[in-house]
Length: 236
Length: 380
Ligand SMILES: Nc1ncnc2c1ncn2[C@@H]1O[C@H](COP(=O)(O)OP(=O)(O)O)[C@@H](O)[C@H]1O
Ligand SMILES: [Mg+2]
Image (cartoon, rainbow over all chains, first blue to last red; front, side, top):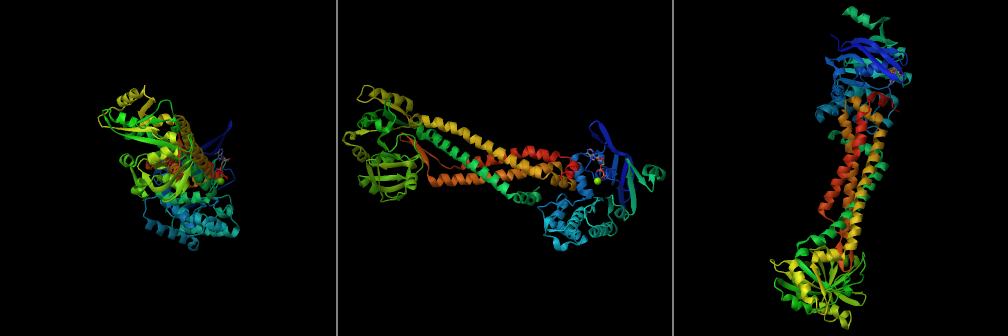
């Protein structure tokens, strides 16, 4: 039993006359507690696949089942509720809300869930502690460094204890030293908090830190040099 | 949704210059709206009261300005004998300005006992006895006293009429707060020897069962062949006729009130559209975190609602303060329209601001809610 099943997913864009098909019948399953890196050339469709799994984009065809729910069948409103409960999203450029403090940014996902104020406070404190930012709670994003902002972004992604944490190039705009800090933090999120992690990156070093590495090439997913579909068919 | 109020307030505060301009623009427009409404209500009040339909005013035929209407005072006796008439009050009217003016002062000379019987007011200062005892004494309406800075003991002169203030009164009828009451005989003499024995108008109070229209006809019939022919109308009709020109103008100004509402709508909508465009990416992030599109819509509506409601409240409060402190009025030919703040108008103003706030937020809110997340996240 895996946590995430991507089955025969195709995504097409109409670009004028021409059709672009970044994902062409992609299949993939991710086990609970795994740390998967998704690599590939720029424009190979990595973000597209991640966004489909995160439920912020719609498939052209195919099925995505996460923790038993086929998310391709949900309405926009229901899908939003589902994201609030199941997905933690780490952006390349943190995307913190500039008018809110670090604390308020981390609290934001919890406001969407039925939860008491005391419970919220406890969870925010735990999340901020996990990213080692307890001394910066009242700071605004503009008062923090890029690394600190990204740590707040990670705290925001894990605070609601999601089913899957997805990260799209989380170290893409950071220097080497900060990249290392963030990668260590992501490893801790996976190991110590036992969260399932899917990380998109085009950086081979970053990608190699994951437990499982897959690549997108010309619309197909490859693992250990083989198409994941055939790999999956074999195990099925 | 209330959990997001701090976020909305902080967003508004982040663009405080824009917020402040929108709120103050809304406030000014609503101030004008309420002011126009007050003028309109003042006009309505003249014709809508019960007294306006049950009391008759006898005026000289074909005359409009009070200075030109001259009725023999002894018409009083003739009219008193008509069945259905309870009492007749002879009144001499003098005004400094017969044309439409924002600072006209209207004197009504009335015998003290009739004044006491037929005018409903409270003296804020001074006393009635000293008014009745002194020939050139005057009771001044509170709005004039405010406007001209008059108090008991002051002497003031308009044209060739000089009086001493013996009291400042607050009337139940707003328009009367712009009147000066003097003794009838004093005002007759003050205007020259040939005015003695004449009055401007006669106010006829009827028994409850009497038919005002019938008695008005009867009065005009009696004097048709008399020394001076008369026109008798209900007080409401008399005031409406006298102010007909002004009423037309006020009716037109009414449209300016609606224009103000349109102005607020476009102002708040513009600001909200700008706010939404500034935050395309931010809304996409909120949606990624799990905010429903309907909630994004609600966020935008709330923001626009806050802007216009805040502006509306400031405008309504401002107009109330302005109207109640200035005692402003407009008068023509001796009839006054008082501009008064009213609770109904204030509520109306705030409700309009609320409705406009919601309307202004619909289009940008819809736009924000419909935005596709992934392209919006790529937005700079
Ligand atoms: N909204 C869109 N309209 C048209 N083409 C798009 C759109 N979004 C992405 N694409 C195309 O899909 C392909 C995959 O994009 P993406 O998933 O962002 O790649 P990656 O993240 O691997 O760099 C690219 O060729 C990109 O140009
Ligand atoms: Mg990408």
